Length: 148
Image (cartoon, rainbow, N blue to C red; front, top):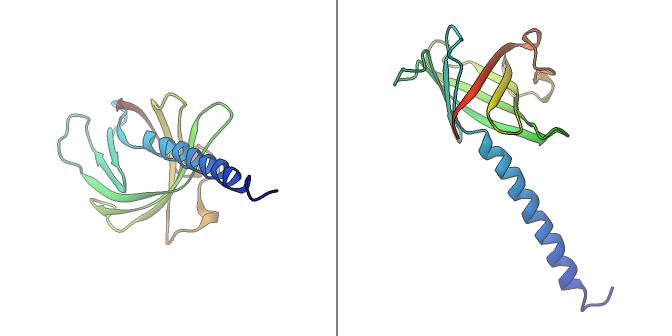
Protein backbone atom coordinates (compact mmCIF):
# COMPACT_ATOMS: atom_id res chain seq x y z
CA UNK A 1 0.00 0.00 0.00
CA UNK A 2 1.40 3.36 -0.95
CA UNK A 3 1.74 6.25 1.47
CA UNK A 4 -1.01 8.14 -0.38
CA UNK A 5 -3.64 5.50 0.43
CA UNK A 6 -2.78 5.11 4.10
CA UNK A 7 -4.69 8.22 5.31
CA UNK A 8 -7.79 7.05 3.42
CA UNK A 9 -7.55 3.56 4.96
CA UNK A 10 -7.13 4.99 8.45
CA UNK A 11 -10.11 7.31 7.90
CA UNK A 12 -12.34 4.42 6.81
CA UNK A 13 -11.35 2.35 9.87
CA UNK A 14 -11.95 5.30 12.23
CA UNK A 15 -15.36 5.99 10.66
CA UNK A 16 -16.35 2.33 11.13
CA UNK A 17 -15.31 2.46 14.80
CA UNK A 18 -17.27 5.68 15.40
CA UNK A 19 -20.38 4.12 13.84
CA UNK A 20 -20.00 0.93 15.91
CA UNK A 21 -19.67 2.86 19.18
CA UNK A 22 -22.64 5.04 18.21
CA UNK A 23 -24.82 1.97 17.66
CA UNK A 24 -23.75 0.48 20.98
CA UNK A 25 -24.55 3.72 22.80
CA UNK A 26 -27.97 3.89 21.09
CA UNK A 27 -28.74 0.38 22.40
CA UNK A 28 -27.73 1.45 25.90
CA UNK A 29 -30.02 4.49 25.59
CA UNK A 30 -33.04 2.18 25.21
CA UNK A 31 -32.15 0.72 28.61
CA UNK A 32 -33.10 3.91 30.47
CA UNK A 33 -36.55 5.27 31.27
CA UNK A 34 -39.66 4.32 33.22
CA UNK A 35 -41.05 0.79 33.10
CA UNK A 36 -44.28 -0.42 34.77
CA UNK A 37 -46.24 -3.57 35.53
CA UNK A 38 -49.51 -2.73 37.26
CA UNK A 39 -50.34 -6.44 37.63
CA UNK A 40 -47.32 -7.09 39.86
CA UNK A 41 -48.00 -7.33 43.60
CA UNK A 42 -44.93 -5.23 44.40
CA UNK A 43 -42.35 -3.31 42.39
CA UNK A 44 -44.92 -2.01 39.92
CA UNK A 45 -42.64 0.74 38.65
CA UNK A 46 -38.92 0.86 37.86
CA UNK A 47 -37.14 4.05 36.82
CA UNK A 48 -33.64 3.94 35.35
CA UNK A 49 -31.15 6.64 34.55
CA UNK A 50 -27.45 6.03 33.85
CA UNK A 51 -26.05 4.24 36.91
CA UNK A 52 -29.25 4.56 39.00
CA UNK A 53 -32.14 2.13 39.52
CA UNK A 54 -35.29 3.01 41.53
CA UNK A 55 -38.17 0.68 42.42
CA UNK A 56 -41.63 1.91 43.44
CA UNK A 57 -44.23 -0.30 45.15
CA UNK A 58 -47.11 1.20 43.15
CA UNK A 59 -47.17 2.99 39.81
CA UNK A 60 -48.71 6.01 41.57
CA UNK A 61 -45.96 6.29 44.23
CA UNK A 62 -43.72 9.35 44.12
CA UNK A 63 -41.00 8.02 46.42
CA UNK A 64 -39.05 4.83 45.73
CA UNK A 65 -39.08 2.12 48.37
CA UNK A 66 -35.78 0.79 47.07
CA UNK A 67 -32.87 2.28 45.16
CA UNK A 68 -29.56 1.06 43.82
CA UNK A 69 -26.74 1.43 41.38
CA UNK A 70 -26.58 -0.56 38.16
CA UNK A 71 -24.04 -0.77 35.37
CA UNK A 72 -24.26 -2.44 32.00
CA UNK A 73 -21.50 -5.05 31.78
CA UNK A 74 -22.32 -6.10 28.21
CA UNK A 75 -25.01 -5.60 25.61
CA UNK A 76 -25.83 -7.18 22.28
CA UNK A 77 -28.60 -7.34 19.70
CA UNK A 78 -29.98 -10.69 18.54
CA UNK A 79 -31.11 -11.57 15.00
CA UNK A 80 -34.69 -10.44 15.83
CA UNK A 81 -33.48 -6.98 16.90
CA UNK A 82 -33.99 -7.55 20.63
CA UNK A 83 -31.49 -5.84 22.95
CA UNK A 84 -29.82 -8.07 25.56
CA UNK A 85 -28.01 -6.70 28.60
CA UNK A 86 -25.97 -8.17 31.40
CA UNK A 87 -25.84 -5.87 34.41
CA UNK A 88 -24.27 -5.70 37.85
CA UNK A 89 -25.66 -3.61 40.67
CA UNK A 90 -25.96 -2.95 44.39
CA UNK A 91 -29.07 -1.94 46.29
CA UNK A 92 -28.24 1.23 48.25
CA UNK A 93 -31.51 1.72 50.16
CA UNK A 94 -34.63 -0.17 51.10
CA UNK A 95 -35.18 -3.70 52.37
CA UNK A 96 -32.32 -5.18 50.33
CA UNK A 97 -29.74 -2.48 51.08
CA UNK A 98 -26.23 -3.81 50.47
CA UNK A 99 -27.33 -6.74 48.29
CA UNK A 100 -25.34 -7.11 45.06
CA UNK A 101 -27.00 -8.62 42.00
CA UNK A 102 -26.31 -9.67 38.43
CA UNK A 103 -28.99 -9.79 35.78
CA UNK A 104 -29.81 -10.88 32.27
CA UNK A 105 -32.28 -8.52 30.58
CA UNK A 106 -34.08 -8.48 27.26
CA UNK A 107 -35.63 -5.34 25.81
CA UNK A 108 -37.69 -6.01 22.69
CA UNK A 109 -36.77 -4.39 19.38
CA UNK A 110 -39.31 -1.59 19.84
CA UNK A 111 -37.93 -0.85 23.31
CA UNK A 112 -41.37 -1.31 24.89
CA UNK A 113 -41.20 -4.68 26.72
CA UNK A 114 -38.53 -5.48 29.30
CA UNK A 115 -37.98 -8.94 30.77
CA UNK A 116 -35.27 -9.58 33.32
CA UNK A 117 -33.93 -12.21 35.66
CA UNK A 118 -31.61 -11.29 38.49
CA UNK A 119 -29.76 -13.24 41.12
CA UNK A 120 -27.96 -12.08 44.28
CA UNK A 121 -24.16 -12.42 44.22
CA UNK A 122 -21.24 -11.75 46.56
CA UNK A 123 -19.23 -9.95 43.86
CA UNK A 124 -19.21 -9.49 40.09
CA UNK A 125 -18.51 -12.86 38.48
CA UNK A 126 -18.83 -13.48 34.74
CA UNK A 127 -19.98 -17.05 35.46
CA UNK A 128 -22.85 -15.93 37.73
CA UNK A 129 -25.08 -14.20 35.18
CA UNK A 130 -28.45 -15.93 34.70
CA UNK A 131 -28.39 -18.07 31.56
CA UNK A 132 -32.08 -17.79 30.60
CA UNK A 133 -35.07 -15.53 31.12
CA UNK A 134 -36.73 -18.01 33.44
CA UNK A 135 -37.91 -17.96 37.06
CA UNK A 136 -35.73 -21.02 37.61
CA UNK A 137 -32.63 -18.91 36.88
CA UNK A 138 -33.40 -16.22 39.49
CA UNK A 139 -36.06 -13.62 40.23
CA UNK A 140 -38.08 -12.94 37.06
CA UNK A 141 -39.68 -9.54 36.35
CA UNK A 142 -41.67 -8.17 33.41
CA UNK A 143 -42.34 -4.51 32.56
CA UNK A 144 -43.78 -2.30 29.82
CA UNK A 145 -42.19 1.03 28.98
CA UNK A 146 -44.25 3.87 30.41
CA UNK A 147 -42.41 6.60 28.51
CA UNK A 148 -39.68 6.61 25.91
